[in-house]
Length: 314
Image (cartoon, rainbow, N blue to C red):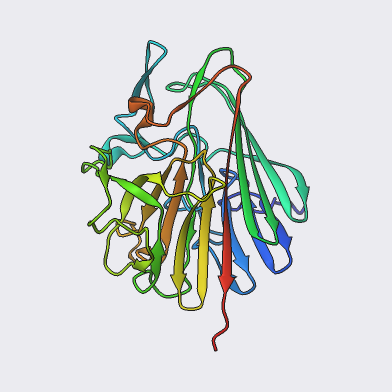
């Protein structure tokens, strides 16, 4: 008697591919995450393979808060809440509650997919959200729309962020040039919690004009962002013949830049730049900086995307 066995489940679950012209992106069931994005033969992101588990939040969406929450504690609507400490060495709750959850693909077309997840009330976050992330490819690159709707009966605290790593196309980011829009940077303590806000002028954190990354170490939040007339802010990574731009709309008043120096895998360090648009500041559940309060039936949508251009070698 022969017994058939199902195929082993990949660490990131089901793989959903979308394409447009010479662009390809892979979105996965675990976390509804962006695993990889290619234009032609070039990896735009420093992602991970279909047979790897995601590390260092690569391509993940950070819901219902981005970055760190000190001690995992906060007070909302006159009630105290305690979340699990998912960064135990620093005693923080980090990057939300949905990164390892199953998301369901819906409305899948050749160049687009919407991933959906219902976040049920739980210890530390007794609120209910319906979540959608729509990934689409167009002539101008990748677009990502994240929508949260409060389906509960009480107001809910909410924030979101994204965690892609831009690949420069060179062995490290040290030889790349970076332009970033932050006028204010956020110093932190040894737990990664902001301790204030300071102008970037005359500091190593000023990238408003393109300059070499060099040996600068960044795990740094920014705000008071330079924006275009349409409200878009941009982070540009320029290396050799490639320029990669991550743009985000006004719903993201904060952005984090991460050079990867603290990554556990030495081979991953400084080989890409984490660019993390955030709708609220780190530790916002305690400080309220940028935090959204969603009333019952209220929705919040935020949009970001990536464009890349590759010049000839001549």
